[in-house]
Length: 356
Image (cartoon, rainbow, N blue to C red):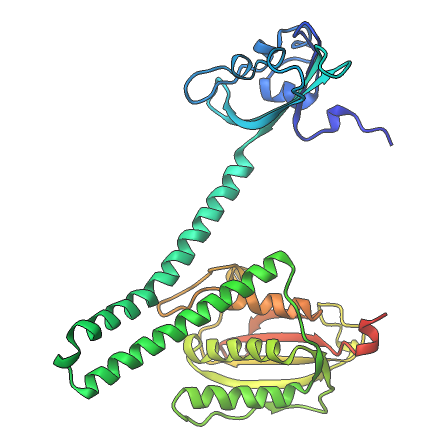
């Protein structure tokens, strides 16, 4: 199939050896609000009427027909249109022979709006990460400085309390850094899994025991296991991370854990992630008000938080990334008894199927 320059998403302007425009694609005409063919024959300086922030024109600054005779390309830079919009402009200098005169100039013009939006997103990400890191570091620095300068003024009980606080802030900092690294690996598609046989009902039982011990030994009901649970081939540590995150969210932000259900699923249920064979569903039900339907997709966004006492906002983003890497899916629904119902669908992923 023939590809035309009019099909290009960016604007293209071609000028001959005399600097006169010989071709413009439809995108350039749209940018310039010009009639078809209106720009043909125009001088390149007038066809590209862009300036830098100091008022210097693109043509006079880059001098496409002058300069070093071996120059072949003009690097992309930001320039501003007469209407004040920012554009990214680059050019290729075509010569009939090495070091010969410029036979034609091919200019590419691109709107900078998308790049600026991505730059703002990166800046927001850096600001959010800096804010999250600063909070525990402030506590650690404050208590350690106080202890170093005024050690003898405090009782053993006061020192012990300060050191416990420093230890808790250090743990919080470690968790945050781990979450940031996991989120970066998911973004880059480099999340590695150490696959092996996993019994999800046993895994759920150990997670509930661990969470109850972390809450001061309060009794926690064991998982509700329905039917015979098949062995899942996956990364046990990553799946512990997922279930722990969901259970802790239910305890901290969902007004308490109602129940944790583990049950087998067959192809007849046709789960939305497209499992064709046997799989396992893990359901976490809480006692809270639930999650409004219009907010359920936002829950899986990076740094999304709701309400006081929220964590880093990376937990559900990482949960979705880990489950997706196992070929599964995460769903949020309403529990008929009230509260949220978060379901994880996981295929069995037998070892021989993974090597086919």
